[in-house]
Length: 551
Image 1 (cartoon, helix red, strand yellow):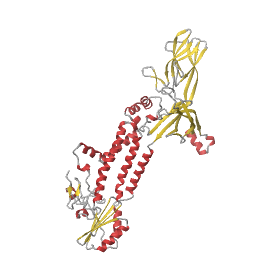
Image 2 (cartoon, rainbow, N blue to C red; image 1 turned 90 degrees about the vertical axis):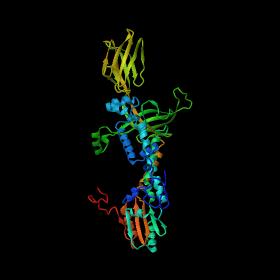
Image 3 (cartoon, one colour; image 1 turned 90 degrees about the horizontal axis):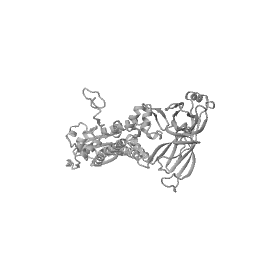
Image 4 (cartoon, rainbow, N blue to C red; image 1 turned 135 degrees about the vertical axis):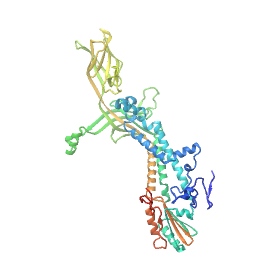
């Protein structure tokens, strides 16, 4: 596109509204304005200039502040929905997510799963939203900060008359243009830490320009923060998994690539004893019931031996023993194991006796491991029991057939085939807690319940985070931008000589009351008159005077 050459000789990019050097209005809109819009110094912004190619349209879409705000709102709403039910990483790993959400939360849970909210923060569409916010921040910043920096760098001391007249703060002091007066004002401006530039007796005093970059520093901080958030989905950078481990059980620690294993030797729970507490706390315990004082898991950490062969049970090398409590994690390498939850007295095994119903004689015990049950139990002398079916969390389905709601043994049920010398073809019996069904008619034998064993279960969170420093850096830079833009403001004061008179114009990006007060202190005891606030002094017809804005 053709560049625009101003009468002052400065060459401006196409689309410039006010000359970057002298401030002359270059567009008809700017010429008709009562006061100049100084938000971006009238500079040429790509999004306001080009709209022809596909790249232009993409750029213009993401450079819109409204688009950025809507992307943030949509992401926040999605994030809020993701907290309604627990994420997949926090549900028991003994049940499929699809089954868990439907069983626990009904049709809402099923819809929650189908829409992908169960694994929200690593879903493809959520990552696209985060990436779009990042792209919007980058394009919004580049679309504004580069033209603004160019315009502020190119500004001259002597500005166009029309530019000065269309500043909000403007005034003329007639017959006051003396060298002594200019020198006196320049000294006062320098005393107030203004950067004063002089050209042929004309002054441009400026300070706090760095505050104009505050919003863009915010954007940089947010971009770095988003990068840190997206790095969490890079393998090896971030792990946040839950390990449910029973007493006596040895499991691989998730996220460690089969290198580390953990044995849970014992789970210990201590509760508050209201008899030993003060009166106020005892009353609270009466209302709340049992309250955990502390709970811990006594564990042993192992590492896979280098001599282990693929496909075989790994050889484990003991690293350390530890007691994991709340806020007292077990740390090793870049990992940390936190105690977050527990489950007491989960069913572990059930023992049945093969019994003659008439005589009550027992022919051997069958101990069923509820986590890894055997298919056949040989009792000797021709007596054996086959496990035809096992339902850890039993209930009857819509068609009357037994089903299991989950793999957790909350309500175990079994289908046994009892084989005896006099019944070599076997007898089938369905046994559940307080329930026995003989589908083939009356049996001679039965599986008589004898006892049950339970185990405590610990829930440990496995964490590894290499992104914290990136997130902290982004947060720090963001706060620097907030302070930079909130506690300082960019002030400019033009003092120009015109035919023996002195013109004073001023602009600030905020705090107009402050710059007017400062100008009054600077021109005190001089022949200069206080300039007018051209916006505040307006009284719009038929409207309410709200600082010159017609409502």
